[in-house]
Image (cartoon, rainbow, N blue to C red; front, side, top):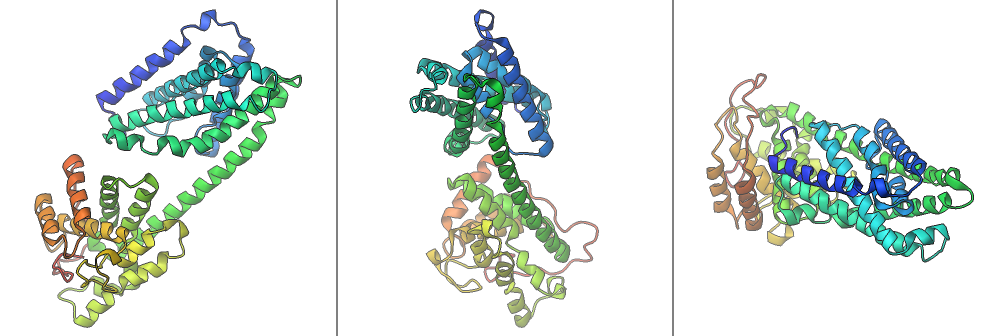
Length: 435
């Protein structure tokens, strides 16, 4: 985001001041400055390689090795060049670099303080295993905790996410990867202080770089899956022009509902995919029916009502979608059992499908079509509340109402664009809500 709220900028400034305070004792620190320079250059080099190869995340072993080898102010200095020189894809780039540098400096400083206070540096020099793992483990925990706390704070202020939700899961999700990097950093520090010196320490980076590359390949594969999903949605938009953009907005509304229900980030992402893909089965419906002028015959309606099953067949082989596949199949079911394709009732309907059903109906009502103008958000919510308990899950409706009261909604025109040939009458579902 280019427009960073003033309170988020103030927060970044406060963290930057804290980072500078970490460096204040540097003139009085007795340390081999060539070690600081070498570790800083190595850290910056790793960041540059990561950026060019589009690896995911930050390479922490060098930073943590600095925390295990150096006094806290010197260890904090190691993180500065790499963070300031790292590329930033989004604007404001300078502010983002400053934030990353300050965050890492405070984290490394805290880790070095804990490591030194628990006798870690003596254990590294003496290669005292397994005791050396104790102070190193404590330092890694503190490093991870500081980064998580700072990340949660910036999320809450910049993205206006509730504080508890911004911090939820950050520490646990990052602990595993940071612990692995911490172990590599400890191995680097022990070899650095051994008779073999820094050259041997650098060899530790080879297997870490390989694992980093594998992790990056995973993210690239995931990005390829997302590109495939987007291509399917674009195909649906081209085939059924009057709902152009509908799938993306249903994905956004589904994500808002999931967040309001307190779901974890991984599940929120899956429900976003569910919303985006919910109508992909329309690719299996004849175009003449999707674009037909006038009311549908009962036989034509039965053909269109097959699109959830077509969609499920299309996505069931995409394993990472998880429960999104059930949402694609069941998002037209109703709590009273009068929906399709299987007439499920109440709790028989998967929770993901109940989320998407509300998001789908809400966007359909608040989007302008070639045959009618959009309903106001308030009117659409009243209709959802009226149908809650019979068609829609009341929990999902309430969650959407709460989310919209905080974040608002800006429905986009999807069919009032060049290329949409002419108006046609609205085709409604069994409840009267456009499906």
